[in-house]
Length: 95
Image (cartoon, rainbow, N blue to C red; front, side, top):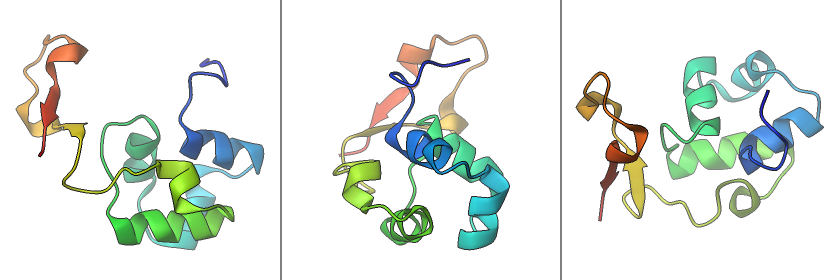
């Protein structure tokens, strides 16, 4: 199990409230698979999705996602992952 020091602010906020991914899905309309991937940093939520999730968790979007805006920084692109490829090779700049 991950230490609370290494988990994302999004997951930490959800766990601190005792909410499940299913409860957040029902409140936001975003699938549990996408929410889980966002918590693990595998996908980036749109600004609209970030606002909806933050509202469901009673938090500020910046506190959960920082300045993580779609189209800036870097993100892991799952469609370009080669099986067996090291995780550090999966990051692609999107600027």
